[in-house]
Length: 156
Image (cartoon, rainbow, N blue to C red; front, side, top):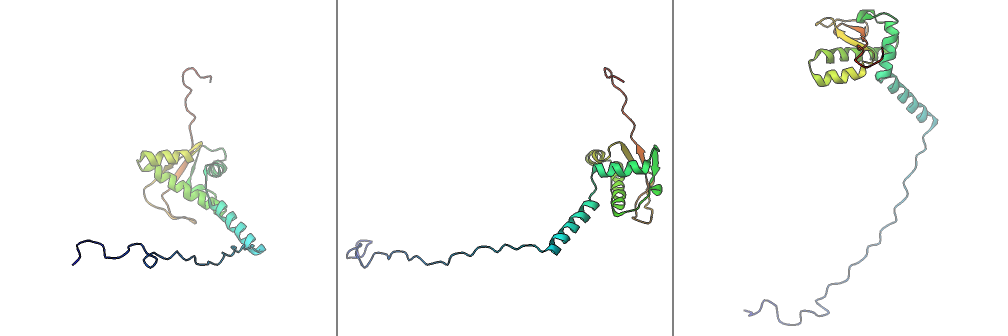
């Protein structure tokens, strides 16, 4: 039984010292390969981007579609729309969504829908889904937006 917590003898001696850390030789990292796309890869990427852009509907594309469909008329029904391309089908689908948003009663959805409807409004004309050649949806009509009344102090 020892009276001290340390064993007898030298605490620091050449035999009790730790050995220095060994540096492991690591292999040098190889450079990453740079792949050069082939002409076919580039063509496929351009085709994918073109298809994505044609299918993407934004406010200017929607305004162009609607003004082409209205062609001077104040109102056009969804059954009368002339669909001739994939972009037209996507615009039609977007109009269905806008009609649903305006009929939802949600102020947030209505505000977002109004941001897409520049110069026109979409109103549902029924509650039951109807089938047509392109997509099933609730019938709607597109109305040219009424110009806001002039307020006091503005030139008319």
